[in-house]
Image (cartoon, rainbow, N blue to C red; front, side, top):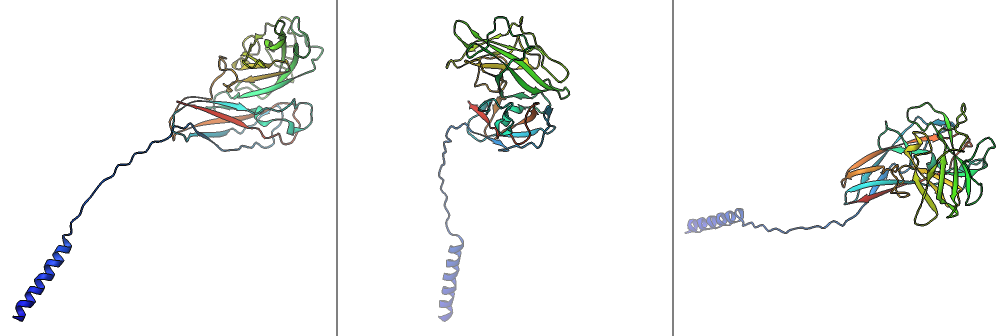
Length: 302
């Protein structure tokens, strides 16, 4: 009898252990849906670049690389660049802090290609007596001024030479301002060894088209400038005192043929592209630290 009871006990325990080893399992599923918000965002790095002491009239040997990553959710189709400008004419002030650094920095998306100014601003100054103005030109506020665009070897692949491209602005007589007038840019620059164009009496000039705000006029450089300068568009303030040349600031004149986007392709989310920047310090800049400049990159998504 005791043996019988013991066998029953062993059998019961075996059945229990067997049941534990063959426990039932089950699965279930849930679905996950995520909607990503539409967003156009870019991230440009490094956030700051610094060049050391650079002699006036030279191009710094160092080219910095910039990386732009699409950190948004839409494809990036175009990118244009706006350079900060000095608040007033810095030349002859003897203070390097009056000079805005980005006005002397050029960009491109290929290091071996020609670098261009996003935009660079110059102001009127006194006309030297040996320079002959355009026919009928009158100097004065809203009538016309003389000035210089200062750079270094604007043509790619040439030896460093300090250059000054003389310019004249002239009003449209009916409008009474220069934003509807004409800009005359020298066909050859002044250098240490050459006077450049000094006679503008028969210069055709480039006619300007006034913007919607009626404070600036824009056009492509075609009749003025040399081959290097004719890669740019130009703007003139209504009071005739300021001239800006630009290549990558599409926001200034989208209808100008000489204006390009710095980027004009399809940059998918998470992808990146690269730019390069170069520095040209013109002659006549005082030694010391320039005012920190800012490049603003504006991306358009699709």
